[in-house]
Amino acid sequence: MADPAVKDLHGGPIIGPGHSFETVTEKISSVVLTPHTPVGWFFGFALAFGGLMMFLVAVTWLFVEGTKIWGVNQPVGWAFAIINFVWWIGIGHAGTLISAILLLFRQEWRTSINRFAEAMTIFAVACAGVFPIIHTGRPWLAYWLFPYPNTMAMWPNFRSPLVWDLFAISTYATVSVLFWYVGLIPDFATLRDRATNKVGRYIYGFFSLGWRGSARHWFRYETAYLLLAGLSTPLVLSVHTIVSFDFASGVIPGWHATIFPPYFVAGAIYAGFAMVLTIAIPLRKFYGLEDFVTMRHIDYMARVMLWTGLVVFYGYVMEVFFAWYSANQYEEAMMYYRWFGPYAWIYWLLIFCNGCVPQLLWFKQVRANIPALFGIAMVVNVGMWLERFVIVVTSLSRDFLPSSWHMFYPTKWDFMTYFGTIGLFCTLLFLFIRVLPMISIFEMRTLVPEAEVKKEAA
Amino acid sequence: MSDPRSVYGIMAEFDGPSELVEAAEKAHHAGYRKMDAYSPYPIEELAEAIGVHRTILPTLVLLAGVIGLIGGFGLACWTSAVDYPINVGGRPPISVPSFIPVAFETTVLLAALTAVFGMIALNGLPQPYHPVFNVPQFAHASRDSFFLCIEAADPMFDREATRKFLERLHPRSLAEVEP
Image 1 (cartoon, rainbow over the protein chains, first blue to last red):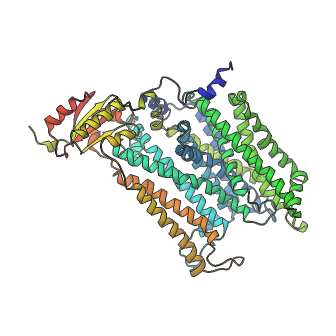
Image 2 (cartoon, rainbow over the protein chains, first blue to last red; image 1 turned 120 degrees about the vertical axis):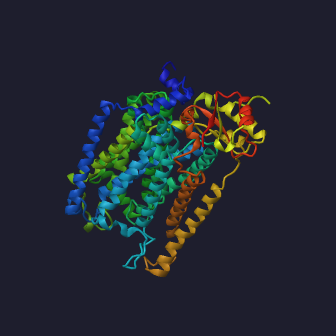
Image 3 (tube, rainbow over the protein chains, first blue to last red; image 1 turned 180 degrees about the vertical axis):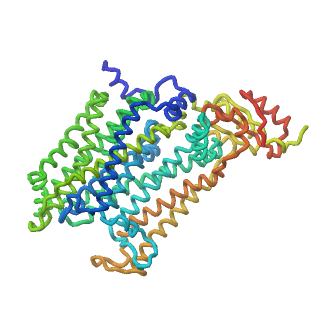
């Protein structure tokens, strides 16, 4: 293997050589503490902010006119709102997976990617949370979902998957924010001590809570962090399982399947890692972080993507198998319409994006090729969106009775809302990389060779 | 000899984690108990060295989880079977499988909130002022320096003797901490 990039994939370090506590601290915190903002940042932020403004326009018009501006109708009553909701929630999952599950498995390579992956989670959950609220048509009454004593003397129905969703998503959002913030406390202290301007010192000082790195504090801190990781691990698996119940507890052909929970969870990790790669590849390039996010990280992420992609593909195969093996004519018809019906091109595009293209990841040369990986990650992002489209729309548009069949065509407002949330996501991401350390500084210090305590031979 | 209460303690700065752990062990061995070590990242051996072995946090988290579980499940039962019973598709008033998702989420939520706020509270944070911040070098504790501070509150603390003791540990620098 002559190609050095390919060689790096296995024996390569998880942090570039020659780093000390000071260089790690300096490199990551200087991105935040410098008064100089790169021109590229302004350019990207402007683009993202434009998307956010488009989102505001779309949502404002929705509030004025109601959901009739969307392409939804009977029988396809949810369409883009639930597609985007599930897509965004899925993207969020890689962040928690990296920060919690990989922490429990003591995978040190997670350290340099967990911070921005967690940020990605929070922003993705924020984007996801918008859709269930705005799709109701009366978003100002969304609080009716909360169980609180009210003058109507009514309670939400705890047997409804939508109430499960509310609990799952709000818990997930809360725990993700807590996890993120806890990880940030020691880094806030570093920024407080390094900031040269007064405002920065006060703001970072405020959020650092007066952290001083005491051994007693670290001890409880580590305990709390591990407990949070232990709690987040079942949480992240439960959230997408519950999201899949939205479908699986329905009776529509194509939804009512026991494969849904694991299939959705794998899909979420798949989509999430694709998004982490989509973010990590440009970030490490622009900010020169190749020492911290090494080729080995990229390779591992690509492998996780390949593996979860295979699980997802297994899900597609099983859906076909169930349709045949159940000998249920509605299930068979559903599969027939997916393959040959009016939305067939979307189904086949999905198989191409999620099933065929990622098979390239079997090759080391592809995993070592940054532009190729970025391309595959983008294809997967699109593919996962198409998957939700196929699940939601093809099943709903042709249910049991031909008299109730109806096609769904999205309107420009559907697209504006969808692309608008991408603007919201990117805006938050750009603000994040400007004001907060995008890689966990104190955890990176533990990877530096001198961090290890050498016991003298007693 | 001056009044020992006029200082918070004496702080020694060390070159690296190994030196700090060694110094902390020696101080603990010498009988000092009211002391603290400061490092820019968590060092497992350090807490051990200054004699911190356990925390009540996991117990609190477990309790909170149990309360969350009972609370979530109880809420679903009480609202759906007692206060506002409705028949949904002929399911029983207490539909155990349907109530599990909510009960699970409230368990995790309460436990996670307790883990974070419990950790912050047990650590006595937020604490904007602390005497150790008076030492100018201490700004490096959040970057690349390692400190051991023996506090004046320790019964064995003696300004001269403690300073001599710390000097024998070969610190990079030594400073008295103003209260």
